[in-house]
Image (cartoon, rainbow, N blue to C red):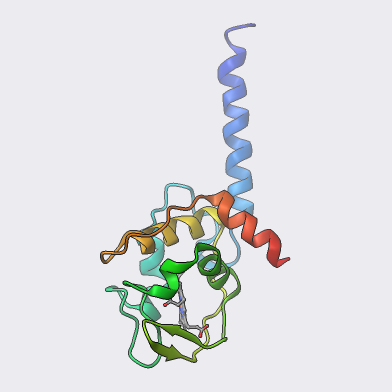
Length: 142
Ligand code: HEC
């Protein structure tokens, strides 16, 4: 093989990947975020208003993510919660919450990163996800 061909090919692979990633992002400020965006930044931008920077939510309104038995029990349910939102009442650590969480407009990569942050922040010892896990759940929601 010609030695010059290899860098050229690598360039093609990288730009195809970037294009897929970009088209996955939906409307608003999250569009175009790259794989280097970290979960904490996404959390501070999109979840903090309801779930709080300490992950404790707001009493009676927004459930906690810190030490949440609901969150830590089932990673697929947590992914669905993010992608689809939910207004089905949930019981978290013995308290019932009846509010509505809107669907979060995140790409697969962003959703994985923000959940990985949540799963390992505030003393949580939870799952580690990747974009393929998110996509698998997203495909079941279509
Ligand atoms: C507008 C407020 C709001 C925003 C923004 C929001 N949530 Fe929620 N979230 C809620 C409410 C309300 C519930 C309970 C919904 C229900 O009853 O189904 C909830 C429930 C959850 C749950 C399941 C219950 C638990 O506490 O474990 C998870 C996980 C979760 N949210 C994660 C997130 C993450 C991660 C983000 C950011 C990407 C986010 N939420 C953004 C309001 C919000």
